[in-house]
Image (cartoon, rainbow, N blue to C red):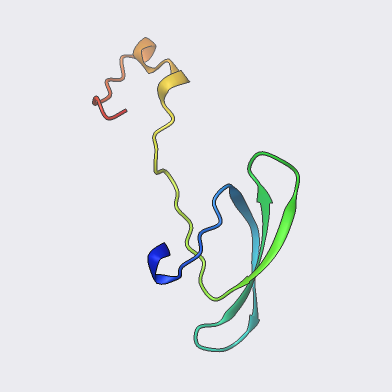
Length: 74
């Protein structure tokens, strides 16, 4: 997707998405916060893609103690 001009803003958590213009596609204002800091930014975009759960964070959950079995992927 990046090779086709799509820009990804990794390391930011969206705080709000506001439609600022009805067009096709609509114009959106995204306010986002750094994942490892306190900086916030406002970015004007026409599309928002949010990826959730790409990597399981189960290593430190001590799931063996309650007899939960995980595949080798996790």
